[in-house]
Length: 414
Image (cartoon, rainbow, N blue to C red; front, side, top):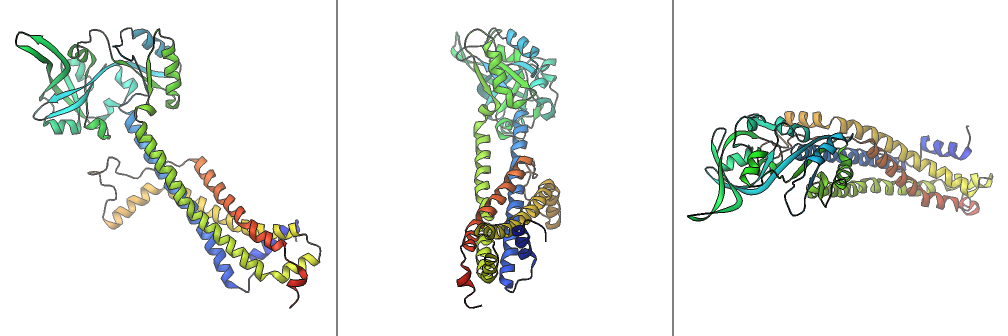
């Protein structure tokens, strides 16, 4: 028998054929409960990580990592910022933009955000060129007064490529006939689909020079869009660049521009973690019941061990080892199963859809029609440690009760 003795006895109790098969059954249920809880927790959180990653990529396909703008006036002296940004090692792109909320009229009328961009610099700060369904980004520079519309916005306006669209600027001008709004007729050069309702239904893109003329901004712009190698350092680098300019500037990164989206996803992940952790908690309670019944069943054995010199602490270790082995095996099975499930969930769902001849996430309803998964090693380690910690805590009371066994009372009727 290997040392230490207490560990050897605990493992022997785990392997031995018990007289009470009900205790063995409860042990298996506890082990299965921990395995299922850990596997489900890993899979669900990985899927939610996948949705968050997919959402982030789609939003950042249309939104730059950060923007620098002025508070209450047009951005006039913006060239130094672009030059400094291009010299910074962490910046991969910088481009001016002009934007304003306004009204568009085709066959229908819709409010939308009109954004003026530089077609030559836009690929450095967004993925608009890759999201065009019809047309090219360069079409904005080939001729004046061209516009690219989101696919849903184009449908609401009832227009397509080559159709005219009238854009009303939020400015008015005085004429002999009175005060009239500033308007300009544009031609639809293309349609894009970002996969995010906010952009597909509410964004129109024009050349930045056309936007300056439409909004009467002269040579001023609304701000500068920036893209970085590490998107999680967006705010710190943008603030660093803005501090080098004279005056006060407004810096907004991608997490602030769409804070509600990411806060909602983070809250859902937290709630799901709490709910699914209860499965592991229930399995841990089963370990308590298993060990309590085992301590009662092994009263005579415990008494003999104590009369042979085993200390109360040693008796506690025996039952802690047995309970922890249930937790370790269950955690190991759940970690392996959950990892395999998380890595293959897309193909598993696709197989189920094919087998059942149905579609769980219809592309006609949902923007994200597949089930993405993004497995993080840190999550796997966190969930495994949680299961092991709960297993350890669940062994303490039964082990303490075993250590308090009095040999004379336990052997009185033996």
